[in-house]
Length: 115
Image (cartoon, rainbow, N blue to C red):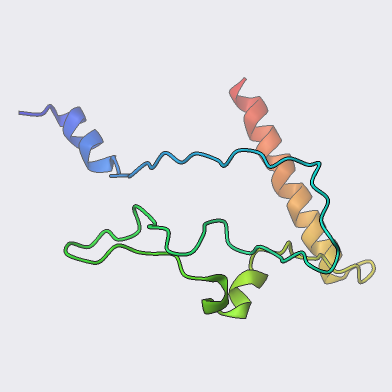
């Protein structure tokens, strides 16, 4: 039998799946590219790569990466960083910057309380 504390911890513990991934070797920088022939690579994995850990239902086929052209255009815009508008004092951009600075200040204060 589990003790009451151990049973409570077992209920709180989440089941997680960790997948170890390895990075590609660095490409040599000495190879010059011509300006007109460079293609923008959008996806981080090549086509037909089996994406482990995404199909968690039983008896399902493995999830395979598609070609970049098969994904919708809006998906690649999610990667881009969000531009904060500079619309003067009291504007949306200033509010966003103040909120971000306030969150960072709260995190720093909470960290200092633990020391």
